Image 1: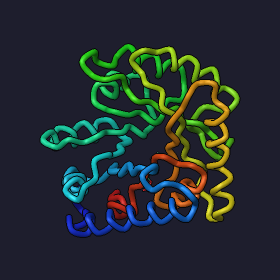
Image 2: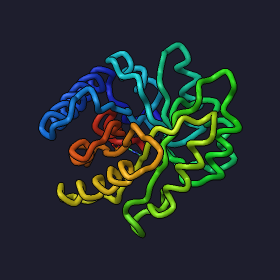
Image 3: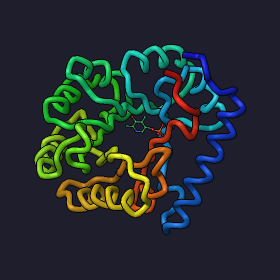
Image 4: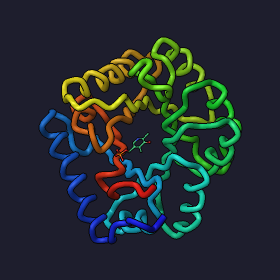
Length: 232
Ligand SMILES: *Cc1c(COP(=O)(O)O)cnc(C)c1O
């Protein structure tokens, strides 16, 4: 997995330019820069890349694959990191996710929520969770349909070991800025229509974070722009 990894200095430089671009996008669209956080998506990059980003000031990291994430967490146990699980969740993986992450972005059904709630260790704060919404219809197989969202939010809000924070989406990629904004606006509207209070919108990747920030993202999930292309 080390093949193709960037030198530490390059990661620091890329991180600084991503943070500057986030800040600039926030200002351009009337947002407070401090209200948009970066989740550095480190999937398929080695633990050393995370260590380099941490040395450059980054604390939040997003991982998609459980076994890979656990191995890196082991290697990086000396660092104070905030771990975000952003991958698809199989129900046989919930115990490890509940025990080893600070945030989960990708809850899309009640069964997963209930398992994470039961399995969150008592000595840890409630798990911060987001519900993944499918705002691209047939173009995406991940996320709950908007019509089913209110009931899932009500269920999660009642689970004591989960702290419901908001919504997440990974819309189908489109090039056009206005079309990118429309997808993110749809997620933002679902959040503001929610009967249960939500404070987090996780949306935007390397390719579309400006549009996400324009529409209210409070967390952007950026991998390639920070760490370079992912090794295969
Ligand atoms: C990989 C991934 C990202 C980051 O994508 P980049 O294009 O590398 O910035 C963001 N969100 C999710 C859910 C991902 O799986």
